[in-house]
Image 1 (cartoon, rainbow, N blue to C red):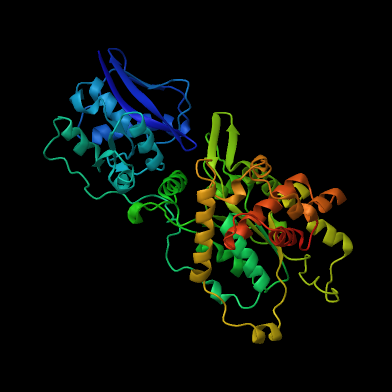
Image 2: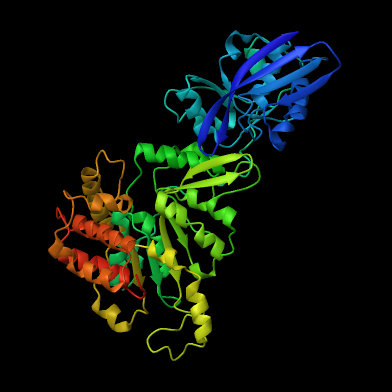
Length: 516
């Protein structure tokens, strides 16, 4: 009879929980039991572990083997526990020395041939292990670069169970053939890197839209672009990430953790330091946008766009369920997904950019003489974006057709580098003003902060807002959002407080083409 113990990590959302893996071997009929709330993929670890041990030249105990994942009431999922289960079982059977292995954290999936396959979520898992006092971690060789991004982690890379068991004192047959090459990361799609930035200079004309894009970037505001096809709505939206400043170290670690869990992170380039850009197709399901899946959910496009941009092109073509699920992250900056096995929280503080045509055919501009849509079709099309969702959009812009006269009159358009410099300066002013509050941009500031006596805008400046509020054209939430944009305009102009001009421009940016 023997007892073996080691450590692993269970991820629920982005939160890692250290899990003690205990294996008990006692005399009796051969049996392999796994307890501690495992899901289906984890339950299959019994077959993978047993075959991997045999392929590593080690004898599996012909006894009753019971593995417990403690705490037993914490849901556990995925194949990342395979390596810890194998090490704990070999410890209990006396096949390896437990002095070193007992206190290490083991993460990795086992192949039937004994190779250690990479798993998702290594970055937040290792960070949770280090925070819990377990600095020594063993990870698959293909995940080693990602694990080394965590400060304070002592990373041991392993490609095969036989190699790892040998370092723990196991007697490995010399004639055993061990594949040395690590397995490439499965289904990994490299997250966007800071490669070629799409230049704002490519957008000709559209001076008002360019101004609105700059204001949105400077304050982290949500944006709604309305105009006929071919006017540059998609071009404008795709150039917004290039205007945003680099992520701070803390933001980069958080964003990279999301992409690690989602399986879209390539550690070769280090932490993600540029704001991400996600543009799901209008046929996307709610689970693919906000996160989901069987068992414990995984992050969707909204979380992968954390600290970056989520762009919904042809927004009215998205299902109403997808659009309405965005209301929670727009207000709270996070997604809380409930499932039968637990609750997962993912950060989702993104800039939402919606683009839409004025009607289904896209020709309802000016007098609308070329439009073929019926009034009912127009109402149905516009109603897909609900009032509560529209109310959460800070800036609304019309993107009209560019005329030849406008092109001839306009000078050379400003490049992304020029506009991004002004955005960085405005962001720095916000960081200084909001230091110690936990907020970074004007878009994150709550209404109570805006209405505080020490920061309240002078009553003479908000006369226009008060009038719109009295007429019912502006909600109280809308008033707060106009004030946030006004603060951003003041930051771009290097003013300490918004003026009546800033408030008027902010109100105009919100009221264009639609009711507040």
